[in-house]
Length: 219
Ligand SMILES: Nc1ncnc2c1ncn2[C@@H]1O[C@H](COP(=O)(O)OP(=O)(O)OP(=O)(O)O)[C@@H](O)[C@H]1O
Ligand SMILES: [Mg+2]
Image 1 (spheres, rainbow, N blue to C red):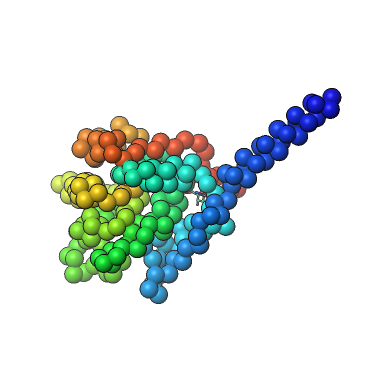
Image 2: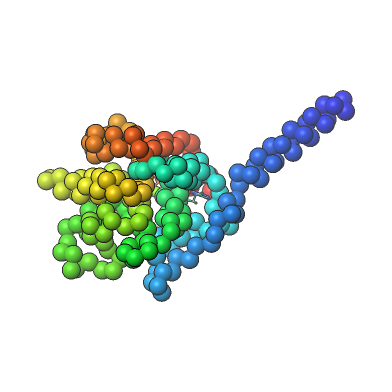
């Protein structure tokens, strides 16, 4: 009986230790969402900036697997899966953690695929300081493109071309890129083509996430 009790308590303690290890990601630094006095530094909006603070952030599979892939030097890395699995939060945290660019001043950037498609339509002179050209997006130190597959597709394929060019140019330059998507791999390949997927599989990573939406769990 005594041994049973001991093994039960050991078990509980063991589980508690596991939970402790996986829970708050406290070794992460707080991140200020103000950059040079401007709101939304690095393209991370206020809501996401609050979500990526150490007190809020848990070491979810999205966060853990993305960090592992990036520290292995993998790029481009795709976080794929259904809604609410922490893809945007993990990608935003990676942007926040990326080092500052030395000379170019083009630090890490968090953008949505939709933003990119909106910006490439406009004359570069009409872009605001937080709206970047395809060239800047291709050359910045670190780039996360959120919500690939949610962009509006124009009849001429200009949007798809711009997105794939940015990914390919960054790959050629050895610059790290993170993409998030709700698409599965075959749908993604249908949309963006074999050239992009070949690079992801070859030198990057396709991280397929599963599970329930954390947005629903919160309720
Ligand atoms: N690492 C984390 N720690 C704590 N909470 C998290 C974490 N990641 C996500 N969440 C919670 O889950 C919610 C959804 O996360 P997120 O927006 O990253 O999902 P997503 O995978 O990008 O979903 P979608 O495909 O709908 O864009 C967040 O608003 C946050 O409340
Ligand atoms: Mg998201």
